[in-house]
Image (cartoon, rainbow, N blue to C red; front, side, top):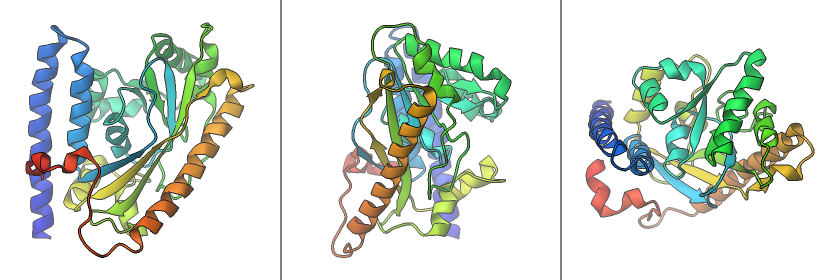
Length: 287
C-alpha cells in the first residue's frame, strides 16, 4: 500500500513536471516552427504512457500521410495517449472532456474535435470532421460512442462514417480500423478480469480516483493493432463501412487476446525483453 502510493505520487509529479516543461517548449516553438508542435505532442503522449506504467506493443502501421479516418474501440481515456504516441492524428471526443480540469485545456490546445451526444447535431459534427479530412489530416474516432471493459467491441455508430463520403475530392479517403487491448501486467502475464477493469473507464468512474489507481499499479502491456486502411469509396454506404470497421476491430481483439495468452503461457524462464523504445536504459530514470 505504502509503496503503491509512493509510486503513484512520483509518477504524478513526473507527469506534471513533464507537462509544464513540454508546454513551455510547445509555445516557444509554435511561432518559429509550427510543424515541430506535432513532435512535441507525440513526445508528451509517449512520456504520459510511461508515467502511467503503460508499455505499448504495436502491430501494423498507422496511415502517415494524407487524409484518413482512424476508427478504434474504446476502453479508457488512456487510449488517447496510447494511440497519439504512435500517430499525429486529431481526436474526436465527447464535449464534456473539454471541461475536464487540465486535460480539457490540453485537448483544446492540440485541436481536439468535441462532439455532442445530441443526435440533432450529427450533421454539423460530420461537417467539422469532413473539414479536417479535406485539409489532409488524420482523425481518430471511437464509434462505439462509449467506453467498455474491453472484452468485446460494441456495434459502431455509423453517423460519423458519413464524413469520408461527404468530401468532394476525387482522390481516395482512407479509413483505417484500429484495435486496442489492455492484456498484460508489468511482468507480461495476462491481466485478470479485475485488473483489466481497473484500466477501463466505465460506469460511474470519476477521473481523479481512477487515474490515481492507475498510477498506483505497476503497469500494463497495451496492444495496438493497426489494420490495413481501405478506401471509403469501395463501400456503398456509411453503415456498410461502419460494419466493416467493426468486424475488423472485433476480429483484431480476438487475435490479440489469443496471441498474448499463447505468448505468455510458457513464459516463466528468464528475463523478458521489451520492444518498446521507452524501455531502453536511457529512459530508466522515468520510472
